[in-house]
Structures are given as structure tokens and as C-alpha cells.
Image 1 (cartoon, protein in one colour):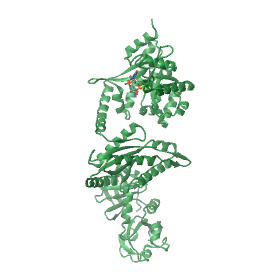
Image 2 (cartoon, helix red, strand yellow):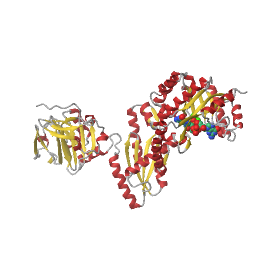
Image 3 (cartoon, protein in one colour):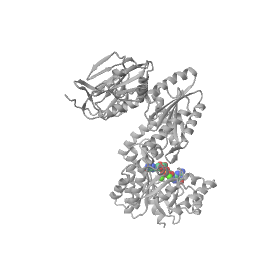
Image 4 (spheres, protein in one colour):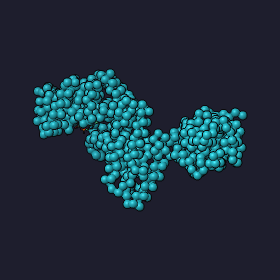
Length: 621
Ligand code: C2E
Ligand code: CA
Ligand code: CA
């Protein structure tokens, strides 16, 4: 009877002594699980029952699938292959396994052999030969299906070399592995396949943990520290986006290679995620660790050639220490990861050590998230409005909406105390949606009072880059019967500089709608002036850090003057933020800034006070 299987390709598992899956290759869509999800599970957990023509296995979605299971045991490892006559897959295993391997048909004839196998049978043409011809001294034969094959025995080749032979038997073919006796190559290679990343050949997480513990005991013995470095490439996504996936892979391989040649053989490097690496080093003193960190960063940042172009890539590194920050591998990797985020927050190409405040901040973060969820339900947020005043007319031409949290216990909470905690997560969208709707309602109220000013709202990168952001703005405007020019969206220079396709598409959608963009905190990012010329930005908000020293630091003063000049020549309105004194105001007037915002005119005000402020300023008696 012909066996009936779903067409699924092949899957190769390597199991350890406990029967846990340590490596999966091939097509795991058969199970609906990813490779990562399968790793570490017991192979037997997949099995529902053995049946006549194979085994019934359980998929992720609960359904079952019939599979044909083939196993061999090599030393302590068990290799399980689920396969039904996909010759291509068998061939690819034979070609990549790096020990002698051949594919043999039902007549016992070799149909394919890899290079290592060819070398073992020097001078002899092996394709078309039978196994008994090639391995004349074979004695242990095993009867299975239609095959007569040597199984796990030692055989003497014609050149007198002794080889160990293993075979994996399928319906139409059998795979035969050969290795010189005593070399343990097959096991090593299978182990290697199980423990190493296919792209960079670096060890994966499984082996990393082992190595970390080895380092702990060595460090204890030598009175050293173990440093766990968590390294993440900056803007790696951009390489994949701007070049190709293949180029991205090339960058990862180059980076891996450079780290290997920078570090000592006793150090461990592992790839733990797409562009994330963990490095384990031992050192007597912190300054030695820093030296290594700098060396790695330096090596990575050297230009990399991608086709005709040269790129350079920086890396952010977080560091945790054994025994200072913990004594468990997972814990230290996690802490180094947290420190890496701290490094990223400092800018690109930085490093940072873990400290306990990060754990406190993380805990604080989850608490704050919960509190913010409640705050949204309980309507504890409020928008304050800070007037933006025209320099020429001295009238209020607009306002910036600034969020405040009326906390039941803490009183008035300023945005810097809660926005950063939610900025990367999904909550920022809810808060952002609320802000936009609220600002639109305020505008509606102003219109009803016949006050014609616009309102700027702040946005976070995560929200701005969300698909449908422009649509959200459009809906809010429509609901409140406003026109697009009533609302201005502030985005920070950093968001703009991230240069993601998502940012670009939101920008062009907003531009299409007719909603103006204001570039916030101008001067604090890595200004790429080219963006200003190409992006539809209507307003530049000169960051208050420049205004603060405009009277005392001539360099800051010159920068402000230049920024205003730049705005003028590009036809972009300039607004100076954080103007606190008359003297600053006078200086800005001299430089011909278009508008100012700051305590000199008014702090952010509650809605009612703001309306009062406008009528006093714009309609003086
Ligand atoms: P920002 O966009 O740069 O806002 C200007 C900040 O400067 C405001 O702080 C404002 O109160 C303060 N400020 C105004 N005039 C002066 C002055 O003369 N001197 C000084 N020293 N400060 C002045 P605030 O309201 O605490 O907001 C801080 C930051 O929080 C904002 O910086 C903005 O990045 C963020 N933020 C505020 N509201 C929102 C919001 O609704 N959504 C998002 N995503 N972020 C917001
Ligand atoms: Ca702002
Ligand atoms: Ca600002």
C-alpha cells in the first residue's frame, strides 16, 4: 500500500541523551512551530502514537500529521529525520554535513557522494558502485525495507583505512555516513550543526550558556571577573532595507569575523539574535574590559564593502559582570541586554555597564504602564497649552499642547516622568490617540469662540511610524469639523533621522492631507541638512539648549543665528523654544526669528487660562 503523507519537505532533528531537541533544520512548517519553539522540547512530546506506516505527530494548532521517522544514534546523540522521499533534501544534507556521506538507492548502489566520501575512496569512482563493493569487509548487514545495509559497524577500505559507517534508511534511498575510526567527526559535525549558527558559524545560545559557566569557574580560580557583553549593531535594519538581505548577511559575517580576530581564542562570541551578539571575556580589572570593548567597537566600525559602496556600522554594547551583577548565565545575559538599551539611549556607538537602577527602572516601567492604562480609563490626563507668539505682531499665533497627568496620589506629573517608560510600547499609541483627539476638541472650542490659531501636538516615533497614523489624524480633524491646517504635528529630529520607510510614508500622507509638520528639538540630533531640503517640514523649533546660552556663549548664539538663516533660505518658519527673559527675546528679535515660545511670555496653561491669555494678548484694550 502506498503511504499517504502531506507534502511537507523534510525535517532533521538532533536529540541529546534526554531526548530533547537540540537542533532542527529543514522545513518546520509541518508542525506550525518555528525552529526556536521546537528547540529544547522533548521529541517524544510531538508524538501522539506510532502507527503502521510511521508516527502520528501533533502540530501546534492541535491537528495531527503522519510522518515517516528515521533515526540513527551516533555516540550519545540521536539523529531523527522526518522525511518521505525528497531527494533534494537528502542531497543537501549529504552535501553540507562535512563528513563522508553518500546517498544509496534500493539496489544498494551509490547515487551521490560528497567530496569527503570521494576522498575516502581515493582514486575509485564510487558512483554506481554497490556498498558491498566499496566496503568489502563489511559484516553486519541489516534487513530493512528493501535495503541491505551496513549499520554502525567498522569497515576496512581498500587502502586499509578503517572507517565507521552509520546509515539512515528511507523508502527509496539510504543515507550513509562514513568517518575514519577514532575521529568522532560525524558526531562533532552533527554537534557543530546543532550548536552553531549557520550564517556566521558562531556558537548559538545553547553552547553559550555552557561556556559562560566554564568561565565562571575559571574566573573564580584565577580571581578574575567575567564580563558578558551584549552587542547590537546600530541601524542594521537600514542595511537590509537599503541594500539586500544578502548584503545584510555579508555584514553579519564580516562583523563576526572581525570580532573573532580581535578577541582571544579563550573568549566566546555567540550570535543570539538577528544582529545581536553576546561576547564572554574574563579580566582582572574593569579597565581591561573597557579596552576590549573599545577594540571590538573599533574593529566593527571599519568600512565594509558592499558591492560598489562602502558602509560603516557602529555598535551599542551593554555589559554585565560576574559575580557583581549575578551568578546565573541567563540573568547576566538579560542584564547586559538592559545595559545595551541604556547604551543605545546615549546615542550610537556607545557602551554602558549594567546597574541596579536599570532593574528598578524596568520594574517601575511595568508599574507605570499599568497605572497609565488606569489613568486613561479614569481620564486623569489633561492637555496644557503653551502660547507661541509671533515676534513681529506679538500676538499668539499658535500653541503647543503638552500632556499632564493629574495623578491621584502624586499630584501633577510631567511628561518626562512617564512618556519615556511607554514610548517603545503599545500604550504610547493610546496616549497619542487621546492627545490628538483632545487637541482637536480644543481647536473646535476655539473656533466656536472665533479664535483662529493652530495647535501643535507632540508625537513619539513609535506612534508616528505606525501604519494609519495619518488616517487617525484625518479622522480626528473630520470628527471635529476642522481643516488640515488647524493642526500641526511635531516630530523630533531623531524620528526624522531614523529614516525608516514608515516615517517617510507617514510624512507624505500627512503632507498629502495638508497637515503641517514641525521639527522639534532642532539642533540636538545628527542634523542632516539634506533632509530639510527634501522633507516637507514647515516649522523648525530651535531647541532650548541653544537659547539657554544665547547670551553667554557666542558659539550657541552663532548656531541660533545660522539656524534662523537656514529656515529663511528654505522658506521654513523658525520658532525659538524656552525663551525665559527679555534679553533673550531681544537677541532673537535681532536675529529675526519668526516666533517664540517660553516662560517669558507664558508657561503651559490649562485650557481656560489659555483662552484668557489669548484674548488679553491678541485683543489688548
Ligand atoms: P518639548 O516638546 O521640547 O516641549 C517643551 C518643554 O519645554 C515642555 O516641557 C515645556 O513646559 C518646557 N518649557 C516651555 N518653556 C520653557 C522655558 O522657558 N524654560 C524651560 N526650562 N522649559 C520650558 P514639558 O511639558 O515638561 O514636556 C517635556 C517633553 O515631553 C516635551 O518636550 C515633549 O517631548 C514631551 N511631551 C509633552 N507632551 C507630550 C505628548 O502629548 N506626547 C508626547 N509623545 N510627548 C509629549
Ligand atoms: Ca514639542
Ligand atoms: Ca522641543
